[in-house]
Image (cartoon, rainbow, N blue to C red; front, side, top):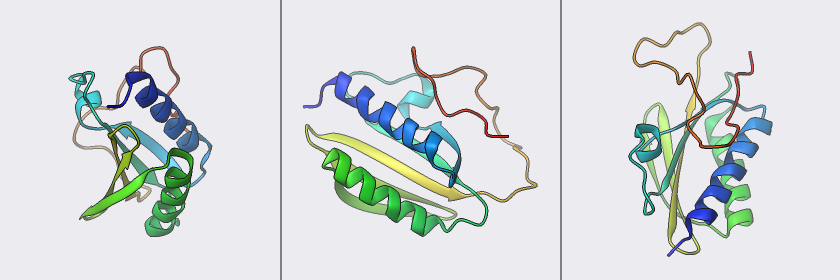
Length: 131
């Protein structure tokens, strides 16, 4: 079974990678961490907005190579829900990580939901606005 500290380390590395990747323009927690219902057994679910002009499949493959190498992750399956693709990984210790990627189109506005006004991670810096 994975240690919570390991899950936090993976989370921090994934967010750091997203912050440094110019192909990623936004990131968000989904699943239990987004709703504040996470617990010791929760997996990680993160979604990423891919910059306009970037090919989602290429970004996904690049991230898969990095994630598999750095975390010894096994790719379990893909779940395409257009326009989003979810890729599910299993890490040593049975930590499941679901990463999803969606292409963004500029000139659209959020019409459902509200952006977070605070960092949902306790004590850490998340991905910041690049605009």
